[in-house]
Amino acid sequence: MPIVTPGFHGRPRGAKKELPPGQYLVHDFPVLSAGPTPRVRPENWEFRITTESGQVHAWNWTAFQALPAEDITVDLHCVTKWSKLDTPWRGVSLDTLMADVTTTAGYALARSVGGYTTNMPLQDLLGGRAWIAFRYAGHDLTPEHGGPARLLVPHLYLWKSAKWVQRIDLLSRDEPGFWETLGYHNYGDPWLEQRYQGD
Amino acid sequence: MAGTALSGRLNWLVSHLAGIRQETATARTLILDVPGWPGHLPGQHVDVRLTAEDGYSTERSYSIASAPDGTRLELTVQRLADGEVSPYLTEVFDLGYPLEVRGPIGGYFAWRPALAPPVLLIGGGSGVVPLMAMLRTRIATASTAPMRLIYSTRSPDTLLYAEELRRIAIAGQDAGLTAEIVYTRSAPPGWTGRVGRLDAAWLRTLTGARAASSRCYICGPTGFVENVADLLTSQGLADWQIRTERFGPGGGS
Amino acid sequence: MSDTWMDGNSMAGPLREVFSVDVTEAVGRCASCKSTGPLAEGRVFGPAPGLVLRCPACDQPLLRLARTPGRTRLDLRGLEYLEFPWSD
Image (cartoon, rainbow over the protein chains, first blue to last red):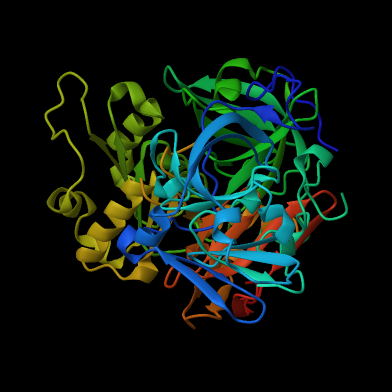
């Protein structure tokens, strides 16, 4: 049981009504990473969706940029307790990318350059709740924040928004990803404070 | 490895601040009394844990600055302007206050005083802290291993352990102990030496002929450590002779 | 500033919560590229949401550690073995 350190307050953690439980507000944009930052050039970039039956849908950068994109403003909630509100992104909705995909799979596994993975129910990627985002705050998404493109699923903790996303595999069985297999929650709803397995 | 608790899981110990030594305008040495301290090897570090009243907790690592001395432990903390912990430890933390510590940690970047080979210590900024522990341990144990410290710092205002290093520079040579300061931005009045960053030729001059047979410990910000390690390798030192501890880009917390 | 990783020795503290010896001095063999070296020479990413020790030769994870309430989970699949010296 930690003892209280007299006079220590840490960074400001003011309570705001819109924040999920246990979160504090930040105004910078912290960079947390599980590995080295990949440097992917758009000419080498590819994103693919593979179905449970092995069908592959792939886009290179040109094809991806030709898709209809949206400007969205979302709140980000990291499991390490910081939240950043009203962040402006531009991205292609997963609804657009999934439009021609035939699947009965219930689950998705996002994979990133470098090996990171994270899983979610397929339905959490649809219905206007997920994007492949390629611009942030009016600029091309920088490598440290997941550029050239990252998955953005803001209704779940930010570890689900896989940086440097390369592919999404549609699976019939759920496959826990990088942090999920280390004890983090399988679903990760910040409003239910689902940080760890068993929450 | 007498004096180091390398058996049993580490637990948090409650220390209290017993003394303060102001090193520079923005850095101070905390003298902690740690009941139950098992002893340590110079080069090892501790984790400290700070907890706010609402339960928010955070940890940081600090190199031990002192030679083993019973239950007494010294940490030198540099205040970072945008730090979360260092402003507290350098400005608010006061005599008698408790601080949870866990250690000693890290056998890799440690010097065992029984070793005979020459030792080359190269520190950048607050990277000098664990090297100072090695220097102080060498003195305290009357080891005869030749030891040379090369300490790179920006200016006299940022120089840690100024008085102690001055004494070593004057008297240490007879005992096989030398300390060289490298000022990278500005030097004290009357300084006749070079000012600037270490380069291959300068480092070679500073490390001397004994470098080839030395065990080297390099500590400081990542860029500094990598540069110096590369220079030593170019000088002909083998990888196994070089141990490094990087403090990350900012050099501290 | 490219990649902000720390030395393997920075992981020594969390590992000492689990192991009764200093694992960073142990020599490990990377399951991916088969190179060997002391864990202290690996590259540590983290510490949140967890610590990842990566092989300095091939960047693959050697060891992953996450502390969640009440437990620490360690994934060692990236290591083929760990070799510890006898204490002197």
